[in-house]
Amino acid sequence: MDNSFYMQTTSFLVAAAMGFAISLIYDVFRILRLFAKPEPVSVFIQDIIFSLICAFLTFGLLIVRCQGEIRWFIFGGELLGFLICRFTLSMLIISAADKIIRAIKAVFRFIDRYLYSPIKKLKNKIVHFLYLQIRKFMVFFNQVLKNTMRMVYNKLKSRKFNEAGAFIDQKNGKKT
Image (cartoon, rainbow, N blue to C red; front, side, top):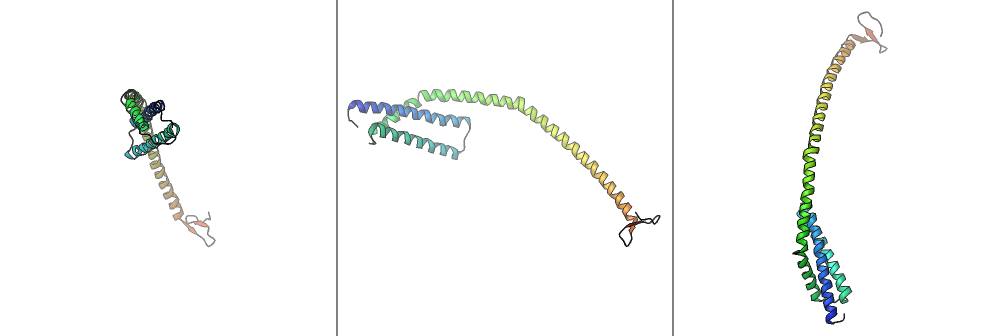
């Protein structure tokens, strides 16, 4: 890298822009965390992914702007860009995203409370009614079967088998 003041200043400003972009990438992760309250393991994985993205971008910047040499003003520029974005634009973005997410959640709560819940309650009442009707039918059907089986059993009880295995009616002595 040419050590001229112009090249170093340009690299510093590019690094600040990169820090600004990294801050916006971090805002994406923050918005995801606002939308769904993640578990600690999920937050840890998101932080690892963010760190890998930052490392890749910083490494690429060092390769392109400094021919792979580590220059501390590059890291300082990234930090400065990150902090400027974090305390200006990022606050506006997160505030707006929070309001949008709250509005979306309010719409879903409204749909759940006034549309889905009554339908769910009606469905539960219908299912319960059908369950009771089926149960009554099964009890009735079970009683009919019990009575039928008793009658068949009684009919068979009054019959005897001959040697050939045919039934003989005891009342009139005929084969059936």
